[in-house]
Structures are given as C-alpha cells and as structure tokens.
Image (cartoon, rainbow, N blue to C red; front, side, top):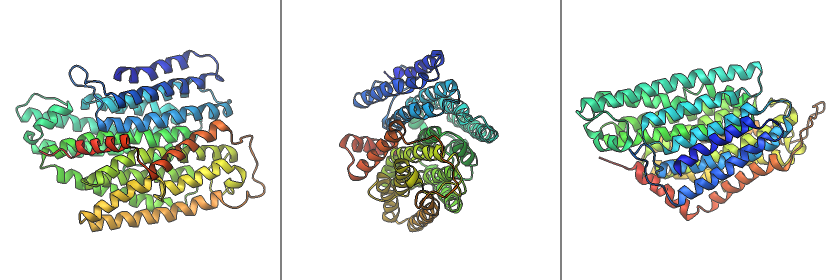
Length: 478
C-alpha cells in the first residue's frame, strides 16, 4: 500500500498529460487527490510492514507529515478546479502534471527510512515545484523560479555532502557504511565525532535552506509572491513540512549520538530565533501581501526550529505545529489568491476593502491572519502556547521571552498590513475584474479554517496518540 501511495499520483500525472481538454484536465487533480487521501487514512489505521531491506516504512513522524500533506493537497486540488476554470487563458497541462508529481515526491519523503533516498525525494520536490512557480510566465515569475532553483539546489547539495560525511563517520567507526536510519541510530554513539559534527552542520544548512530558515530564506519572498495561491499553499504547507521531516531524521541521530545533541539543539534554537527576528523586521509595511505571507512562513519555520531545539515538552508543540501551520497557510494563500484575482494586484496600496468586495475571501483572509498569529481559539494558539510554556517550565526564560517578543512584533506588523487590506471601502477608481467568489474557490479554504478551529477546541484521540508516538520517537537517547 505504501507503493500505491507514491504511484497513484504518478498515474494521475500521466492521465493529466493525456487528457486533451484544458477545461476537463483540472478534474484529474481531485480525482487523484481524494483517493490518495483515503489511502492515507487506511495506512494510518493499519500501518504496512517495512519494505524488504527497511528502506521504506511509515513511522509516526512520517504519518504526521503525510496526513498534513494529503489533507492540504486534497483541498488545493478541489480549489484548483475553480481557479483554473477562471484562468482559462493559461495552459494548465504542466501545472496539473507538476502538482501530481509533487504529491508523489512529497509522499515518498514521508516513507523514506534511507537518508540517501530521502535526499533524492526532497530534491525531486525541488525540481517538480519549479514549473509551478513559473505558471504566470512573466519576467518576475521566471526570476523567482531561478532564485528558488539556485538557492534550494545549493542547499540540497550541501545536504548531500552532509550525508557523505555521515556515511564516512560510520566507516571510521569500523562499521559498514550505511544511511539507513535504524542502523545509524544503533551505532550513533560509536561514530567519529569530528565527521559527525561536520555532517550535522552541512545537513542543518542544507535542509534549513530548503525549509526557509533565515538567513537562508532569500528564495521565499519572490517564490511565494509570484506563484499562484494554491502553489504558495503547497510551498508553505507541503515542502516546508518535507524539509522539516528531513531535519527530524537528523535530530534523531544527533540525540542518539549523545555528544552532538547539545550542539544541534543550540543551533536549531539560534536559527529559529533569527528566523523569527527576520520575520518581525520585514513583516511590517509590506507593499505586497503575498510577500508578507512569505515572511510569515519564515516566522513559523523558526517556531518549529526553536521547539525542536528546546526538546522535551516543546516537541509535542513542534509536531502539532507541523499540521497547524500547513492548514492555516492553506487558508491564507487560497483566500489571498482570490483577492489577487479580484483586484488584479497584490499591492497593499491598491487592495483595500476586500471584505466589501469579496465578503467570503476577505473574511477568510482576516480569520487566517487571526489564526496564524497564534490567537485563540484556533489550533496554532495551542501549539505555540505549548512551546512557549515548555520554555519557561524548563527554565529557558530568555528564549521564552524572545519567543513572545517576536510573536508580538509579528502580530503588530502583520495587522498593520492585513487590517487596512480587508477593512473599509473599496477606493474609487479601482477597476473590478470578472472574478467573483464561487463555491469551488471559497469552500476549500473554509473547510481548512473549520478544521483548525475544531483542532483548537478539541484534539481527536487518534491524532493525540499519533503526536505522542511521534514525540516518543524524538526522545530517543543513547
């Protein structure tokens, strides 16, 4: 069944390539994504055994990322039918094929237990995402695509060097060279400390650039700003989670090694706080509201990195935030895509009074802002509260204080952009496009908003158990 999860989207991509009609081709997306979501539910209920050789297995960490990706992609696939119905002037064959190939690659990331294969899967997500960013085919989108490819490729190349150093450290320990996670965890304490240290630095920088941790985030503002809203949602809620899963694998090895855990956790906290500080500085007075969402993504990868660095009680918040951040970003990017189409502009000078022109999309964008800034009763509040409370309980008062300070600055900065954008009336002279809120472009983000609202009030027992199982995997000690 694990193989079916990977192959089903590839088959869908083939069907999308064969279908001649641009009008009916987008229907392949939900026709593939929804069975993929059902298959995901099946493997969550009854986990298949590891593949021969142990290269593929869906452990609790992989399950958490897989469920967030499958749910977000399914919602985006339904939204894509309405979105591409409006954008009929653009050819959509490459977009449909690329989206499904991306789903296949992201699924592969979640089931990899071999770090070399994990690297291949992460690199595949980079390649498949590039034509999606270039969808609008203008000068700004091609610049954003090249910047994304260049920075992510350099990052992923550094990660490959890190994997080589890791394998070499096993040779120096007179062990058979391997990148299988299980054997690496078993012999982690015997690995050569020097090469292990170098491996962790390269892996952190490599996967951190893919995740968008500051100061390696330079590709994010352009890519998020120029990509269609549904692609932005998958960048912020799909690719980020895949890169974070890769960091979780490295984190497991660091903890198992004993001596390297303090260094790795300190580096995560430093990069996480720097990311939050960058977001706090650049969030205010953004002239492009989609670029503002990019800095929001930088902030939230920082939150996840800080939580991972803190360890212990914050691990639950980190894993829960993987789901919350992905789904909330879906609300924000899909509704912002609707606003962009209605005004034919992303400028915060032009876009005013969105609630008056698009009551549903404007309301969703406003609610998404409240959720992503960690306000109750939405689920990001629960995960962020568990992280910051853990910091103070463990006596990390400076980290907890900086965490709260950056959250407050981000809230003020984001509010200064979002509130004028949605409130008030539409300025005179702003032309109205043919876009109107429709069921297919409003219901998907509305569903995501309903989910994060429910999760903020009550976490279902199966999800709670899955999160606890994930935390147990991260608490491995020599």
